[in-house]
Length: 202
Ligand code: PCA
Image 1 (cartoon, rainbow, N blue to C red):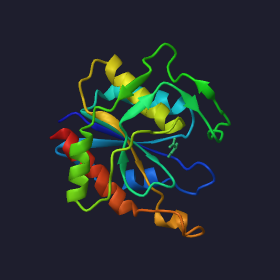
Image 2: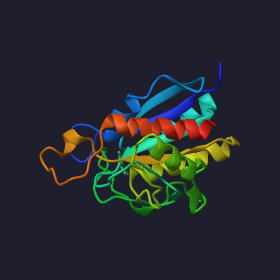
Image 3: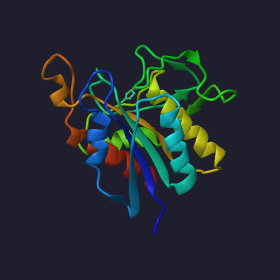
Image 4: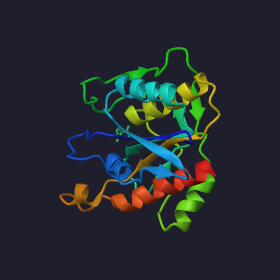
């Protein structure tokens, strides 16, 4: 059996009833290119979210890791280029924590670059009819922290694998009460994530 691929999404936060990242992740099939997809729903909590994904990486030694978050306001699927070793929260996390500049990992490198094939992934998403673009910042909230922890764990375990993060826009239901907001269907976001996985495993 081929090594699994870890794909994570998040629980709701910021007053929303759903999280577009989990809606897209849960629509993914159970395997890709012969690799079982191990899906994990993470809490929007600094520390705990990173601990959960790090434990999964250590236990499963995956063939690839793709973490996914919701970025309200974005118009397309955005694989992230970089995670930085800082946490700054505009709103408290789901446990009430609101760090203002603490490092993700004390003494860790300032930043990690995604090891996903970003440009090829965007080309594959375009070919699949999914609007997408590489993003140069994942923010400094829980998503950046998870991306940093993923890349730090992969490096610490000596795994040479594609690993990184993508943000997806709100789903249409999240914009009904505010139709000026951008949205993308979960089906399209999920198709985009699938293209990222296929490209990463090629
Ligand atoms: N988005 C937030 C955290 C959880 C999520 O889905 C972020 O972009 O940091």
